[in-house]
Image (tube, rainbow, N blue to C red; front, side, top):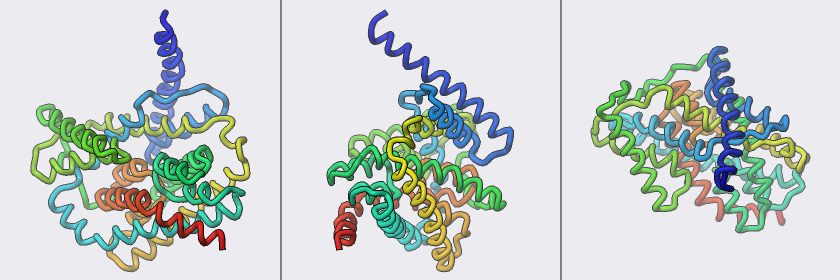
Length: 352
């Protein structure tokens, strides 16, 4: 057996148990009628097994495949009528994106004071942007990349764990008036769906834009939908499988050493993640006073979770999928572009 074959065999010995455990956890969570069962079940099961010392590994490329499924499914919602409605909410979308930058700065101040870390680490760990984008920006300014990645893992896990349960137990499921334009799986037009989604991925990759595997399919399918191209819906098992792969990828970020590496910082990261949830809900309440958008939809639109995680939550709970999607996409853009400028301001504030 060659060294490459041994490596592949070793890898699959870690990957296959991960997928089996995730599938069993997803099935159990679905049987218990838990919200987002195919993401939350695998997330908790895999994270628990990892922290117990089991050497589980995610499927190579699994997170990207899951993001592709979520992005393609979301793109089907963007009919001409929906886009016209979104244009009416442009001020709301901009306010939600700008508010996330302000709330991230407030949480960064707390992390700086209580976490015992330098300004770059505190700032980029607290901003609710993509973990890889924030880590890359922090690296340019001398931040601790490992702690920033850990803080974002804690934040996303807490948001994914808390928000769907809170919304489900509040009885807000099914209040969405938006529906995807394609609702039936059609073998004849399914290749068009796949082609449009992969064109979007290719464009984002060529332009070196982050989150290409979720935003690329979303944009590609959305443009095809807007153009009136007949598209198939995605089979339910593909969407559920996408959630499972994302849950596995998130769960595999945890390990026995995760919380032992810097316990004080991890505790503060969890505190600021909880605070960001409270502050984002307060922002949703404020925006709700200024618009006719339902509060549950706004709470998802302003939540400090990842793009794919929050958008699939909106899809499963049927809560303003297009509006939530646009808010989170713009939030990523604002945080990625505005982080450079706002960090200079943050550094001056903490130095004063």
